Image 1: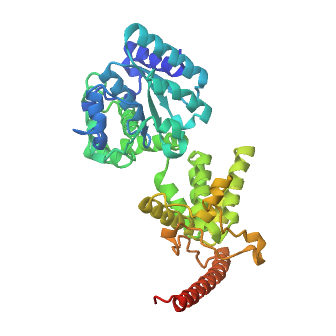
Image 2: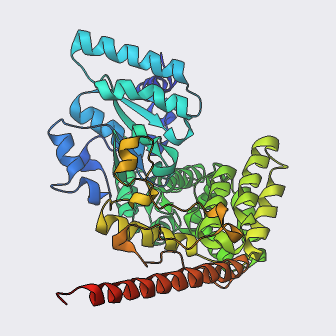
Image 3: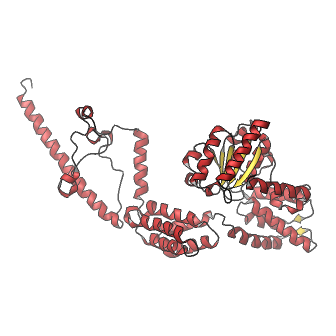
Length: 468
């Protein structure tokens, strides 16, 4: 039996014996779509996901969102609504063997009971390429309906082949009003909650909802800790002091678990872009000490090196990639040193976003104009027929000319003269700008000379033409 399924069975068995043995956040998981709080952008009336659930036509999915927003809960709700068997695996401690075992069970279940299987892969971004590829044929055949859950952007963490066979739904952090609903529900629920044993002041509820970062699990866990504290002191009223104590304890656990810090990563990137090595180092260390995944930070630095430094300092990309390789080689704790070196280097580099603007401009031309014909002189001519059709005719090999450069037009005719790359005057890119300007000046002189020669040729032709 797959590891994740065994864990789920243990939870259910424990809950059957004594619900108090199961954490409050686990007990209060919604059981139906209508019990789900928040996420109305994907579960509201007439939304794609809600209609898929109600019509029992759920495709393979990836739920992407911050911790505590209901990714696992939604998988359970979908399984209950569609009467499918939910098999849960964690990518942290599962491998290809567990996938094969789960698929074999799904095949038997489908053949014997005509029951479908929802295969939930928690933290699917932690599966490597081979493990993700192992899912592909079973998803394609419909042996299992995959539900991947991830806190990382699936565009970067999930193989494109697997991603193309799933629908991605982005979950959002819960609003304070949503968390208030959950807390009120947990306080009053006599089956799974605190059974009305405790009352909470407005100050308690406001403090918990404000400081739970949109995380339902964090809010309910804080409530549970506060209730235990009040119970030990033979009180039934939860106040602001209980909330402060509960969240202080929970914050340490939350940070140690390595949950994503979206505001902090934004501050880190903006500090790099703003050329402030002190702030960049501070936010880097803050995230590392909070348990952030180092590879996530390294990937962000690789992207930054291309997007915000680019050719103003061509070494930047190499430094960022080398830091990633160095971390893979030495790991923690020493791996923080090449990370810090890279962050300081990137912050102190000259900046240019011309890589991003060049890509955007070229992409705009491609999307607007479509696949324009490649000029004949640039086409490959491996056969006599293609040569006779003009392929490769007139192409001039730059290395045959002084300076390894010859003025030439390489863009399709419809785009002739357009410029996508506009180098800045920052760092090395200033030298690139000078070099390009010199080459373009030569091209303009050649073009003017050709036009002048053509005009002279046309003028001579007119003089010889008796009909003129």
